[in-house]
Length: 614
Image (cartoon, rainbow, N blue to C red):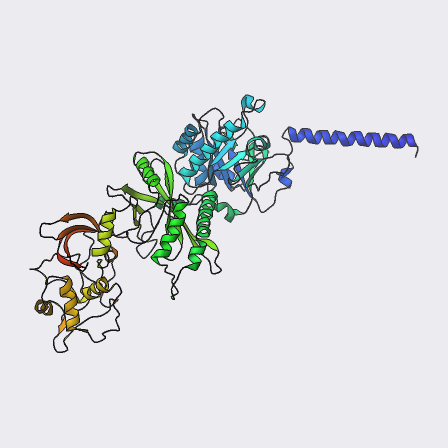
């Protein structure tokens, strides 16, 4: 074959190749061909996104064409609602298609107005996919794009507002142009929905969740001005897609709400950071010989002081403890009471060395609590084994400085046992004089195992006191240590029992023998340990007595106003309020003169003596 012929063949072949290539490109640009459809994994779930351009849609037909999900345009900017949204929103759901709503972001409208329009239009997203913000160029902005700082500032606000409303991170739909200019170095915690109708997404620096692979899709059942529809895939299977649906059941009930990745990471980082801050104190503290670690008050105080020194609002679970740096939290509560949104974080050092983190979130209408707890693993690494997010049904900051609230919790028939959602948090510190008086006069008595503080009595009316139950508590008051049950296994000797009781109470030994369970033959008073056989545990029994007022009397006695404080029992400041009159003796001990109940919660059970007069 001559060289001239070879040249003509190569020339013709080249022309044919480039002609086919140009035709191929023209077909792609003209929406006559889409190669992405041949490159999609068969494992991916397929879906569409629609607006009024698709006209009236027969969603049952769409469902039959292997379409699993659909994103439906709801709003645009601060004033436009898609005319077909409500129809598509309901009909697609009825057809069994998993649906989500999207908002077209405006460069010209404040984020607050855009969020308000979307929330008002879409309402509840229970059982639907996470919300989507569609950000792309429009009009003259493609040639004159707005400033990066301006866009990212408004977009960030909109994302936060929608996340606060729906308690899930919105997805961001965008093009490569917008992504590279505004998003590439930001918002990496938000699910990405990328448009690329020419080839599979690449060079994003992150994994896409949704991919709009074609804008030339043709499906039966659409009758709009636009012949084509956008086709999408989800990067995962049907089960994984379910993870992007808002938990409708629990959102309705207010508990086990979805925790965003950012909130989870922040909570974990904060808990672990504070655990590391007090690592040496925890490691060197005496943890006792039991399997359940209980740190000393000194160790807890040292841990709290170190955390407080870093500026954190922190307290402990010990009775009468207060929050360091409480002022900012109190300001937050006042702000919320005025209807203004905001967040605040408090920390708590638990008796076993764990550190709790409570983030309170108020959106202007409802309060939510994101609670996490940091702990130590077996190999002494800080971990966060517990985290929950729930709505607070009702809350109040009281005049006495308590934040009291009720969390949304599972109820019957979801659970067979009652879950208590009540909580009482001391915000404003207790008056120092009241605290000292509480520790000296009432703390060791309490309301469990004896009825000295929860019944009416005086010197002329002493019959109904449970003296046999009271003995161990007065023993602890006098000796600063708990009573040892093995000391007297066959009853407490008459002299020892009577000397202790008559030392603290205005009663004679003779009356004591009548009113208490006394064995005259053995000359002993019966005593038994408090247990399941003689005591029905109640929340009221866990109340802590706190002195709230002190009145000096002319006869040298002092009358204390005492509130019983219980986190678990009821949505009240106190379970009981009573006036206790005492007299301080020369040796520093307290003699109890009388007690009168002023207020008693209806939830307080009838007192049960641990020993009967059989």
